[in-house]
Image 1 (cartoon, helix red, strand yellow):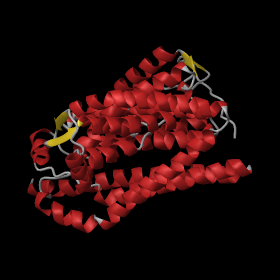
Image 2 (spheres, rainbow, N blue to C red):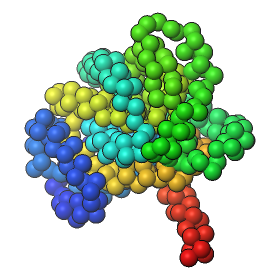
Image 3 (cartoon, helix red, strand yellow):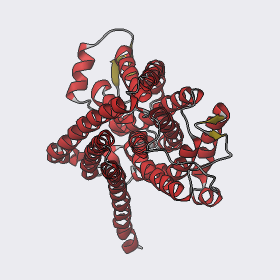
Image 4 (cartoon, helix red, strand yellow):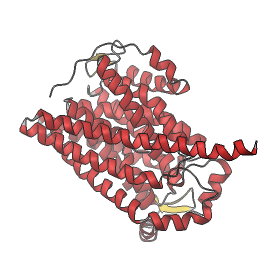
Length: 404
């Protein structure tokens, strides 16, 4: 498949619809544009999109991905990059544009999580060095593989393995731990809300973090790896800086190699390797993605790997979606939705595999099926979040109405 040609689209109507979120969005896009000039075949802002039909698709897809990103703290370009590859874009453009997209979305979502008190700036700051080194190593690897004609295949294989493995783990844990989680959370049910317990802010959040118990594997790592310097994080978590650096490098490498913010690896790693509380892991993950996405998109942009004609319409949609997803964490219990998220990762893995097979065999239908699976899975989970949020708000408003 060949990449679709870009054409100019107006952005005024879309800009009005996303209100305050667009202010942050325009700042992010302006930073990217001023740093890159004309990249990916786009001369600054002379071209905003990829044509009326594709612009609408990218705006809608950005909305969906933004909801997932804001709610789970992961779910940005790990969907966008495979979709761009299935559309036929060059691997370097798909990866670079994915990183530029996730940078803009992360800025918007991080501001919301900051308001909820869910960002550990000490942890995020400690991860920047390892993340930066990992991104540069990943970027160099992509361009080397592209020069020898292996980038697309290698990236797709890694996506299949990662999405499939993580999706299976998330789905298994969601199904097997549901009953146990309900029993453990029973005593805190009246005080807790939000995705995975991360819908809090202010003093309530601090009270919950004071009772935080790290997962067993995180405790084991904390007890085994006690190489100085040690640092104390939010939730009374004490861990070696070297553990944090290792997690940062690994996720940075994936960011540079796959064009992702690294959240779908970093967020679980913060929980299971570092021992951070779920709400802190989500918020800090987004804060870290601001840096990994910003650094990665700048590096790729300098090499002509960022196409603003792709990024801008995606960001217009995600500006609203990220705020919706972040706000939903305050009212929605994610236990019932996590299994769908795991299913979405599995569907994404199958979609990339089908698309790659279609490309190898020259069967366009398989590539189309793969693209439909990627988009469909994302829409289904985002829809579940929105519907559950509306139902929860409606349920909570009924007692108030009766009392009045």
